[in-house]
Image (cartoon, rainbow over all chains, first blue to last red):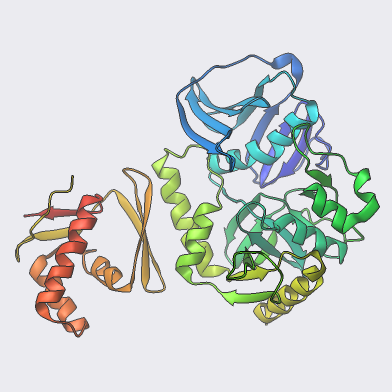
Length: 329
Length: 97
């Protein structure tokens, strides 16, 4: 078995997850909740369900993740890719069915980037759909709808020497002195166009994260400092918004800017940015509601308006760093 | 179809136990635990929400709001009837006629 810590979870897995740093065994996992993750091919046994209690869809309406309650836990089905079982208590995760074209890389990617964030939620953690970097010894997080450029901006920071902290799943934990962020793993996942723009010819060195997607897994781009494997104070959350002209096109007619965000807007955005496993669990929803309210009272949240122009990324970084410096003071 | 509720002065109103809410700089967010639907209240509605954290009669709420806002009594009463009707319809408050 292989032991890892990711998203505030101590994961014991029966296969190597190449994205994560393997811990020495017996590992010191501190107070992290333990999760068993079984992905080995010999263990597959299909579980069927049709009573989906929640279905996540792509922009074209196609289901990308369906959740159902089954005996002993939950079935998470990624149609035509893989199915996973999560025990009721969130402590055991099993890949129960890889569809015909499912590859090992795809299964590992789904387990790590989609299933474990939901498991973190089931175990009582606040898991945000956010990408983050480390700047000036604290974490700076980016939220926003898919495609607004969270990972691209994080990669840009990494190329400038500010290491990534997580991509798409940020677990935050309240501590006495503030709010701590739990790390994901080094690197980001970029659409091919973004990867080409940032990395040029080197994009070929980075494989797709799964057989079904064009997204490239880019391990800590550039010469960024070492990946932070420790919980790190969360300094600010930025809601990424694309700068769209009144005419509706996304031309970069204006410079990047940071705007104040009302508590209502910030809270609403965070509600839309959480990973949830059992969306029918009112105790969880109630707990999450209170945690988000506390978070928004303790961590500054801003709107970061960015143009659709890769050339503007250095300017975006500059205004974020300047804002972080103001917050730090 | 919504049945209009006509609240009397002595009608007693309180927030439902099946919700959680929080203050957001003068506005309010509410999660209805019966249907997992989220709601937002503007500052005026938020002041009503604040008043009914402890059960109050319609007359008590109306009079408190008249002290807080410069508004015609008839207009306020009408708006308050609408707001409380909507909150009741969504299961966010309990009303004892």
